[in-house]
Length: 278
Image (cartoon, rainbow, N blue to C red):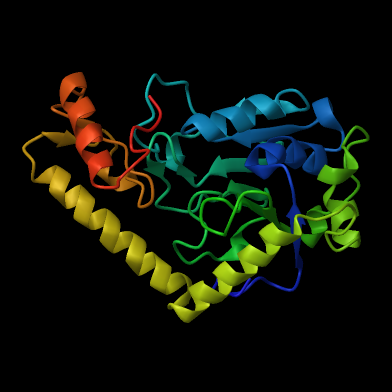
């Protein structure tokens, strides 16, 4: 994983799995909480994907959502407002919420509790100090390559005996011991991932990708901010995503006719699939 500039410390395992980020919503609690309902984890819900992860985990363990439920996710409250558990087995968050366009601008302080992060949509877009995390996972299809492979970077002390009901294909222990070859791996997806990593390295590494993401997002947000509220991004500027930019046209609530016209004209110019989730 040469794209991570600080490198991955020697006490971490890199595992190539299948099932995407959604598979990890189950794999994380099944591996890190082998006593299941006797154990608890803290979840920072800041959008759709962290909410889905928390819901999935609730099938296996106790889940403490550290933030109150909100109608719209437009910011990340400071950690001083989080209601953390004293007995959590891990602290979970999603670094970038694609649908809501909310991105963390800090790494949560979890103390001695393992920090677990879904970086599916922004891995390789900024430097990462892996040593601050117990576990990082990312579906490859956003930045690492093509759909079909999921990268899990996990600290060795967390690779223990999983819950008895954990399927072997989701077991970190089994897959680490078998060097990601316990079952037939998605070889072509892994091959493409390798090519992407080499391309990233040739083009300035993660620092180079960070500069690209910052500049491209700056251009778009600057246009929005100078449009006299014609283009509106409802996300708090401090938490605006550098890689997923939701916006409305014609005001904060949007104008359906203007947005339909925008999508029609964008398609004529080769810009497709801009409608997003709403």
